[in-house]
Length: 211
Image 1: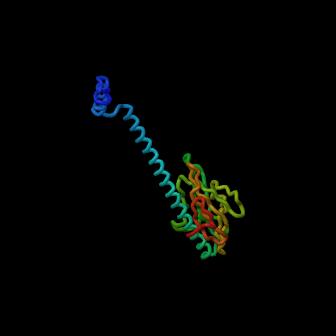
Image 2 (image 1 turned 60 degrees about the vertical axis):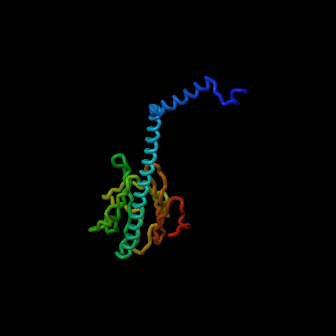
Image 3 (image 1 turned 135 degrees about the horizontal axis):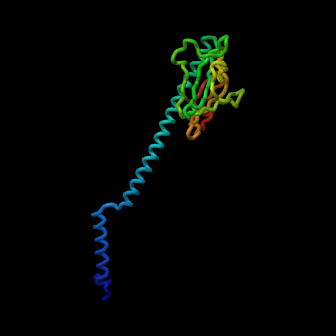
């Protein structure tokens, strides 16, 4: 009768089984090899970096959205303030490099006989609005689609890009909100000739907006 039918094992087969069992028991006793440990550490570091990057971007997006919502509220307030005071008000957006970082600031202005200037005795509410460091803004106005947001010289009393007229009208346009690091469009603030300021996420059109 053949050996495979009897269930008997040859001496060679027995030696192979003994070697396999010895190898398994030795691996269990010695633990992971140095290469296996290095691979495990590399995977952990890689996963930690990815998670940290995503959390950082998420936190930055939240901060930018809070800035956008705050500016939206202030623009609504300025339109009401201009109507109640019977004096034109405005928003001047400034972007300039500082310490290698593009700084963005919004200045609230009022029209005086001598020209545009920051409101005298204004409250903290109308203090210059400093945007998050990761902010890049792109302003488009109905009568001037190529608005350059540069540095402001107070001595020259420049006119604001966005004017809130005493009659209730506003310079029509929209403001795009992007990140400095990725230049990814996150939000847009849209407004018409009579205000109606609306904050939209990237990709959403004003016609599709549902409050």
